[in-house]
Length: 117
Image (cartoon, rainbow, N blue to C red; front, side, top):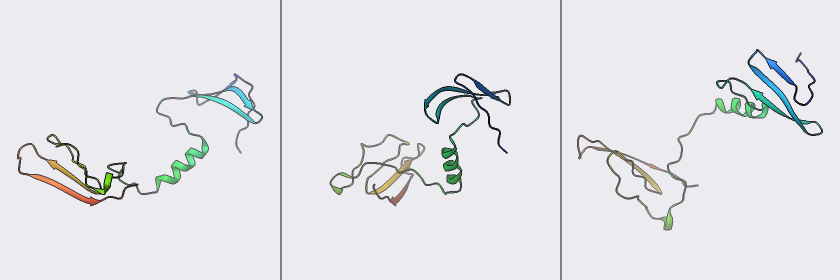
């Protein structure tokens, strides 16, 4: 059975000696503002955020998109010539190339189709 406590404004609850929960103010009927003091390595979430995080743990992750803006005039657009060891991003069909410093001729490229939002 969970523990139920009553606290007034500016009164606190101490948990395990290092977590302090203080009632700061009553916002409106049935709602209060709480202040939580806890060690930095401890995650503190509202219950609905905690449930969402737990549900997302089992989902597979996806790589982030390389660009967010759609292509202009449906053409390939390239950035200025990249410096050594920089990636080149083209819109519509995404091409990423990596250049090694030791050899000017050796390069690796990766191409994939990427849909724009």
